Image (cartoon, rainbow over all chains, first blue to last red; front, side, top):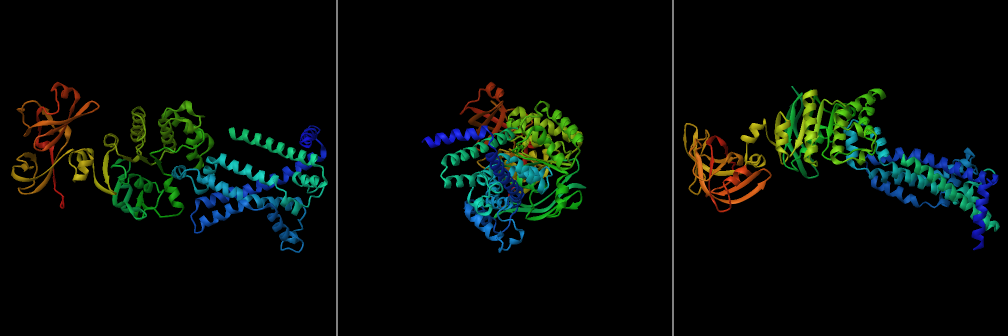
Length: 228
Length: 363
């Protein structure tokens, strides 16, 4: 029990003192997961519109597959990216294994199905009446999609937040394709794993608290944006 | 030359046929009302006219050109029309953004958009609501936003689907005034679907009765309300007294019709003797009196009041005269005559107040 209490005070201490090493790790976590989330959103939002507004054979099956991929184990994604980008792998010539780029790719692969699936259901929540009204008022296909995305903005934002949350809290993929290299690919979750292995439970838990604090700040900012 | 012309238009959902072989032309600047009961296919027809749906069969001509079944041209044609749906779907945006979106989609400049939106807000009486979220408005206000959103585009054609169906009487009057103001000011071509016959009568130049997916009759209000073409139209336009009989004599255009139970009525008709017909009288054309009236009216029947019900300022009186007649009188006159169930009363109507139709075969 004292461990928990000590780790909490230590976390506060690290936060207040802006401990450079912790800040560097936290900043890297934010950058990598933020980039992965942004790229995943850029892919998912238009793609979700495309899938939602078009009728094609196998649509139901495709959505089923996307939803199944919500449950992708992070370590499996890491493994696949690892095999693809390993020196002897088919994409080995990029030479990006054990770099932040590989981590971004891994996390993007991990959360794209989640963003895609949740955005599709967000769009389905907007009634056909709104779609017809937009079409009737002279919106083109792309203009209608944009309006419907705006109508579903709260649900879409929730999807993005969830995707970001899954990215920043995962460790399996980051560890495999990033390698937890100090000052290069070490992020909050991989540090927690390392500190736990070293037996410094206090620091490990403190780092967890720091990760949650980051999440809190991001949530406050996004909620402010939503209310506008 | 019609602005909108539909030819042999049919449409269905699955196995259910909703529209069956419609032909209709609406002229430039004309206000055409589609009247018909719920489920007759009015909304489907408007959706097809707005090019939201592709008809199962048949063609639409807009401004003389055949509308293609797919492709970019449909968007161009659709941008010349506006469609006001029965239930207004306002977007979860400010009132201003709701009204501006159609202009933005047409790449109108920012200044011009603001100018037009402000002018239309004033016209529909929502100038104080500019920055409010449209989702927070009442039903009547939302319908005015929907109307403003369409009018700001200055469409050549305005399609209206039961624009006042869910509104209170005050909001209804406001919307109706706006519609007729637009019709006269901008001579916008309109197609208005309504189940409210008086609204159709009041706003439209011409009416069409849509029954079970077919246009049963088109014409002006007098044609439709006084001379329905068949029994179904007669029923729908409120001809409550429909009697079946045979013409027994015809003297110079005044026919005597045996309607059974020893009753004969006289009516203006050119049908010959022995023709099986259907005689219709509007309930408001029947007058009631306590004694036999000495008047020019040819038909007067003694009977007993079977039922009285109140419809606002009017009383609907059912009379059993051997034949069953329904009369609409003001509540005041019903009270003056102290009408009560079982009381004796004379029901009187003119020979010119009877509309004679050929009896449909199989009935």
